[in-house]
Image (tube, rainbow, N blue to C red; front, side):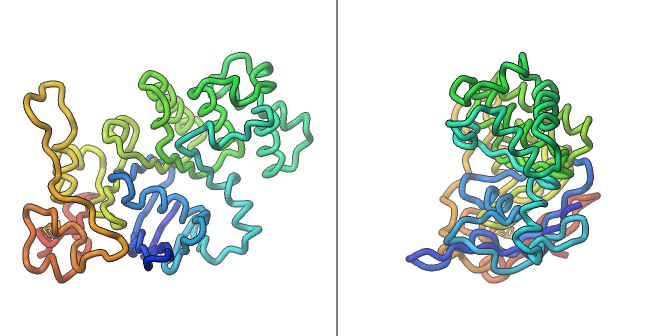
Length: 317
Ligand code: SF4
């Protein structure tokens, strides 16, 4: 459904050029949930915003292709791209409070979204909004439509955002840390809701998170990102049972376990400066298996198993 090829997004700041995405490749198949995992600042959200062509200034997509249902989104005119957003690809953001407009009722906002993308009357849009509120499990949909965002809890606000994102039945839903701002029990409800709606509406999901527990719960495949590049991509059982890249291994070892005694494992060092990234493998200064070649050459993709790919010189034949 979506194929990202050699995508490069840079930010042109006073100090120089921040090379946030460095020629990344990514594929999302129909009706699957793909998780993108990585530390804060590794480029996960920039990947999502690049797909929707919503990169804020001073950022710019400087190279690559984003093929959605066979057509390059980077070549679409602004108006056509606006129609794709919401109709075909929707996005849910991390913080529902800042995504909703505080001076309009949630009903007004949802019906406006529906009418922006579908040629329906106000009454039709209202009926559709009530139907969507029922689907996302909001209580008393008719009354909830008349409420302002501040009258709803964080979990209810995120349900409104999911209703808005899915109201036009998009083929792809991008969810950027959709549960980070919510408490744990509400997180589980929202994840169950997304899973249920995915089954019902046959939508593909691109889930961005730093939480491997969430990935294990709802993703089919996962792509692990480090400093603006993907380092490993695999089905969920492979990543948890047979991780290959030293960074993926470090990430999995750093998850706290119930039986944990003593100190947690950590990955030594700090993330490289994207204003002046190192040559070769961007992880080489922190990697316990680093070799001479790692400082000079960027590792290419190696196939390890079925749908399991790794970018590391350790696996180059
Ligand atoms: Fe480590 Fe080299 Fe592999 Fe990078 S390419 S992860 S430095 S072994």
